[in-house]
Image (cartoon, rainbow over the protein chains, first blue to last red):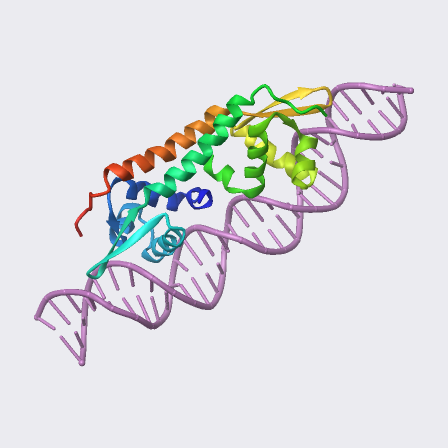
Length: 93
Length: 93
DNA sequence: GCGTCTTATCATCACCGCGTGATATCAGCG
DNA sequence: CGCTGATATCACGCGGTGATGATAAGACGC
């Protein structure tokens, strides 16, 4: 999941989808990337369950799944929390 | 920052440092990676401000900076939150 | 059915980043 | 001061991955 967010274009897509559901052509307009490029990234996001596709006529709307994002946010926050509580701990050499 | 966490070895290092402050030799033992490899990753983490180095004799202790982790966790959580509140929004084609 | 528009899939290429080896630096110790 | 051990730096090779082009698959209107 973090690997998916690590790519700039995918991060942009996720950011755009956080605001509203969009179809592929919107994402192509907004990002300026080629359609095939967007489509490839959407597939990865889809297979990872980060977004879900809703076919609508000849368009395909994509919406974000907040749970997956929230889960990774919680994971990272958990690391920060552990670091805070163990800030004094140090293993001797 | 997310790019840093995207690498498996770096993620492992961050995870280990979340529990306690460690020096390079500890990380080498725990991860099984070569020293030069660990050191290269530590540099990236250091330059990004994710960890801070504390020289201690001929050893170098590394500790995690919780703020940076917390900030990225908040950022991702913010995206999830926005997605939740705008789950009904949809831009027409 | 035909043309057009939107989207998806696949193969290919180029490039970036990780791992590694060689080497330098520095601290401690005799 | 020389030696050893811990760490850092640099250059290089190779593999994974993102971008692209060509193409296929549907959906809509005529």
